[in-house]
Image (cartoon, rainbow, N blue to C red):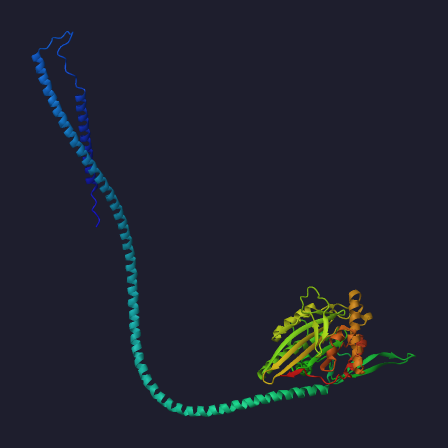
Length: 579
């Protein structure tokens, strides 16, 4: 409980009373001081006799009277002093009581001030709470209104729900009757399921038999495919004539059959100058493609050969011909953007291989593929998958006892799908050495060799295969007089012609069945040694430029291709082990 504070008027009256008491006490103290001074300053009694004086000498009776009077006065004064002391003592007590009362009143006044401040603070807090309660009341009123609306809506929904319940009860009754009929039908279905399960088991066993037969058929397919390739020859030659610059087919070239090309030589003038004639040269190859042939037609002819790499064979496809005859177009396709119909043999081979990998995965085959891409430039080997900023040092060729070839130091990129290979082809194309000559605006100045190694394993049959696909784009051959090469380009041309000449020597030795084949005469022939070694499948494109100015180079290329076509490398061997 809080004490009720006194009013300001009462506190003022008490303060005035204290001032009156203190002033009366002050007067009493002054009177005591006057009385004590009187007593202390009281004159001594007049002597009874004096030796001299002009006054009359008092008689003893007068002296006794004065003494008596003085004593009575002294007694009165003593009595007054005692009374004064008593008054002083009482005044001191009263003063002490007044001071105590003043102290008490001061403490009461301080407590009253604190109580007043506390009450004011309490009033402010209560007013704030009242304000908060008012806002809460307004919020609760709005909630009550909202709840009433919701209650009305829910009441409507309950009414609708009750009507739905009645409808659902009727529907439930109908469903129960239908369920009875369904149970009866289910019993019949169970009998059918049992029959189908028995048939399914029979089908599963039949599938197992078919899968085993599929493995056997796959082996037969590979054997028949290899027999077909052997009948066609382990080294095959295709001739392709690119379209002329003006879009027409020159009269000097004709195509009497799908495997034959006829080309007219230069004019021969008789000794006396009376007659002029042109000699006709006919060449027969495995297939001849005229200028109207598309990349798709060429791919159909070599797709099965590329598939042999999946089966575990070493496969080599290379393009040969003079500069500007379309070798790079045939192997790599045109520069981007590339139309689907113009894609080269290298991208198509990659897509074909990964399609076969995907198809054979359903027959328990697992394949791992890796890629290398190198070029031979001025009789040095460089890695086309390198950074391209600084050309690496000359790499080394290593032939293993199992007839495999490795370029030591070259980057080997593992690939999982064809999307992993195409960026590598773009990188290699940017790093490849090219230059401008009079015969070709952008002549390839190096031989490029793309190699994909395919390792396969079958967990069911225990077979392990290793196949290699080599796709080679040879640099273009040129006559020094016609190319007008100078400086570094002249040196490049000489090295290109030298390596191609060494390739011709190797082909001649193979066709003559010589005991010594000069593979080591150039880096190109040494790198391709196992492609001509007798246990691989090889295809050569001879590319021809149809213009009249190119007739000498075209005849030279066709004669070289004819020599290659006459070679017999023996039967290809499959690299396979059975665990």
